[in-house]
Image 1: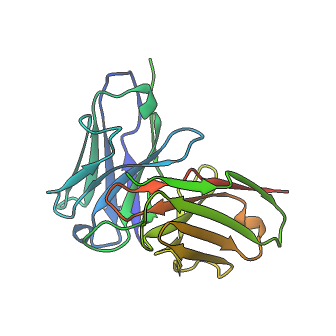
Image 2: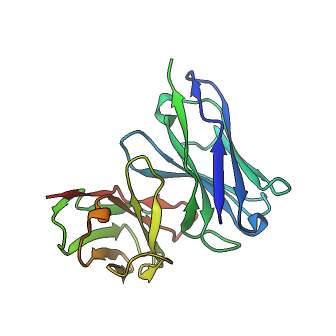
Length: 121
Length: 107
């Protein structure tokens, strides 16, 4: 059974930093690109960032480029999202998601339960 | 970036109704489209991928169609468990984009 367990969400002040983690199990982690998707309260879904299978290639939404860094540790079956320079509009539930097919970028077939990041003074 | 326009934003329907939701892409995405269902407080769940392929375990009353720029999700006979918000997702490029969502409410 595929499981994606996010952690690290918290209340942080504007300008602050936070690191989210996602521990994966139940599939061959090293075969799949991994992604973060967020959802602001009462709003729709927004793709945030994707990391390739070996971590060598990363992609970012314009809204987070230069502030967020995605990475993965294949020895720990874990992906991360380092968030710096946080703004109030980064407040959202952040979901760890698995790409639907091995190797590349597709749709998302499994989602974690989400972790809440609140940016407020 | 590819923009996805989804409509309607809200839909009121009764159990047993046939329901159709539409997503329009700002440029051709071939068949690289998925549909998701989300219930309050829960993560989205994939229903359809590659425009018309039903994900494992998804009831056959859900179906998807379309290619290029226009896509539809149809629920042939709405069931009580189907009242939720639905999103389309284009995955033609690494910069994936979702539609704005359609909330299906009880009439």
